[in-house]
Image (cartoon, rainbow, N blue to C red; front, side):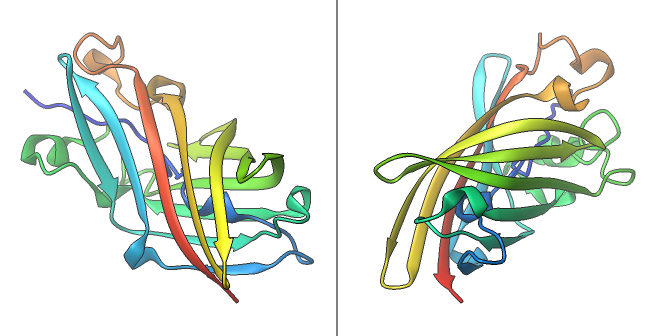
Amino acid sequence: MKFLAPRVATTWAATALGALLLAGPASAAGWTVDTAHSKLSFTGSQSGTAFSGQFTRWDATIDFDPANPATGHATVTIDMASAKTGDVQKDQSLPEADWFSTKAFPKAVFEATSFKAKGGNQYDAVGTLTIRGIKKDVTLPFTLDVAGGKAHAVGKLDLVRTDYGVGQGAWGDGKMVALAVSVTVDLNATAK
């Protein structure tokens, strides 16, 4: 029996949603994400057993000034065919039409259009997440630590996979694969 993981990045992504944690506009500071030392992952549950995976191919454009977060901007683009769980059945199922449908929708996109400071090192990335062509408003809470031109951001976005059409047909009711999915971003970046 095939299983399928939730559709992010982005993230899910991301995303989704991943690099959105560090966003900002033209007047903000630009950041280069170190994808080799960053992770865009997801978790879900099938038949009551938790599983996790990650997107191995994604990129991010980030402009973010902690002193002026409202002007930030970030875009994270996730290659949905790069989702890996380490389980052969899941990994073969995820790209199929019932799940991510990667032939029709190869990319998921998280776009943060602004950021809100919440005190200390805590922020919200406010924007949209698009998966399978379905675009929804999302808010990604994250922490950000900046020192010596280096930034580390960690955040988690909780989603309902069917809001994005992920898990069609027999998978749509949540009986086998839970509807709730979380996308976690753990980003390391360097100031441009």
